[in-house]
Each structure stands twice: as C-alpha cells, then as structure tokens.
Length: 326
Image (cartoon, rainbow, N blue to C red; front, side, top):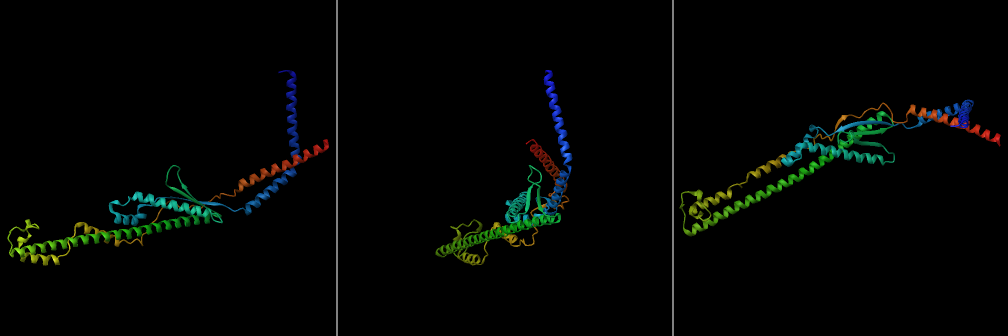
C-alpha cells in the first residue's frame, strides 16, 4: 500500500469520527425535543394501558375418566351384551374422545360468535393423545377460571346426556330383541306340544282300529311313533289328556333369555353419575396477564419516543443545512 493510500484512509476515518461527534452534538442540543417526544410516547402508552382490554388465560389439564366414573355405564353394557361388551379401557378412550370432539365443537362455535371467545383444547404433551390441555381467555383472572370450569362442566354434562340416551336406546332395542326371542321359543314349544298330541291321537286311531286296548309291550322307553299303538287305546287316551294339560317344555336357552330380559328391565340409568373426564389439574387462577404487558409497553414507548425525537432533531437540522447551502 502506498503512502497516498494511507493518507486517504486516515482522512476518511477522521471524517467519520467528526460526523459521529457532530451527530451526538446535534442530538444533545435537541435533547428537549427528544425528551418531549419520549414523555408524549410514555403518556400515550399509559393511556393505552388504561383503556386496553386485559387478557388472562386460565388452563386446566384433563384425561380419561376413572373406572368408577363410568362404572354404571360399563355395568349396563355388560348386562346388555355380556362377553361382547367393550372392554373398560376401550370405553374410557371412547368417552374421552367424545368429550374432546364436543369440546372442540364448542370452541369453534364460541370463536364464530359476534363477540368471539377464545377456548382451546390441545395435547398437553406433544406426541401423546392424553392428557389434554384446555384453556380460556377472559378479561379478568377470576372470570377466566370460572368460565373455563363452566365450559368443562357443560361439555361433561352434554356428553353424559348423549351416552345416557344411547344407553336407553340400546336397552330398548335389546329388550325388544329378547322379547321376540322368547315369543319365538314359546311358539316352537307350542308347535312341539301340538305335534306330540297329534302323534298320540294318530296312534290311538290305529290302536282302536286294531282293537288294542291294553299294553302289548313291557318296556315303554323303546316305543317309537310306529309302535306307539301297542301301548293300547286306554293308555293313549290317558296320554292325550295328560299332554293337553302339561305345560310347555323349554330349553335352558329360554330361561337364560328370560333372565337376561329381567336383568335389562331392572337397569336404572337415571341415577347413574357418568363423567367423561378426570382432572389432572383444575382450572388455574392466572397471576400474570397475557396482554397488555406493562413493562414491555413502556420500554417500547421510551424507545419509540426517543427514535421519533431524534428523527425530528436530525431532520430539522438537515433541513436548515440545506436551506443555508441553497
């Protein structure tokens, strides 16, 4: 590098240093303007903080209900469907799934109101379906906590009502199915009885035609339809009278069906206390508001006021310099 280059570099450095000092001097001379701008900005910020709507967020964490909270519902399903009833773990997942869906629908509805309300539900831990974090934003911490608890309870009652209505429909449908099964089995038993009587009447007719009045065989357990006439007309007449007054004969399945029907008819779901969720953490009472932030707002006001004041001072001086040159 030549000596000339060094001289040029030194002059540029000196020029920059002089410009910076001149800039600082201008700002110092216009400090009153800058202070006034800062004060005005702070006053505006205080005014904003006074009229701005506060936002407080209350949060709760929920998960699937305990077994005891759905015990009545689970027992009712076991009575209705026996071994084919859903497992309690599947039932817990189904119930909390209904709660989540219903809560999301409520959140969407509140967000689309004329005065929107911010109600959210999301995974508490990323990558895990449960537990769920629900939150609500209000103008005061007490209102946020109270309103969130109300919306959770409202959704819980809605889901419980839906499950009770579903259960009532299932009970009615299953009872109708079992009653139809009983009637069918009774019809079959009556037909079997009528067929038995007809068979004996037919054997009696053959016995009377053959003149067989007394039993011709000793072992009655080996009697068939073709050999029944050998029992004699007297015995066959007695059998007909006995069969006519004999009650219907049912299989074990008939009595099991009847027992199932009685169990279903005695179900009482009106007193069932069904809950679709369990609290991991109840709605909190927030201690720090979301907005407006006092400290951040005032700091930004000071910075913005200082920048505006400095801009006014430098701009005014630049304008004076331009007019002087002109």
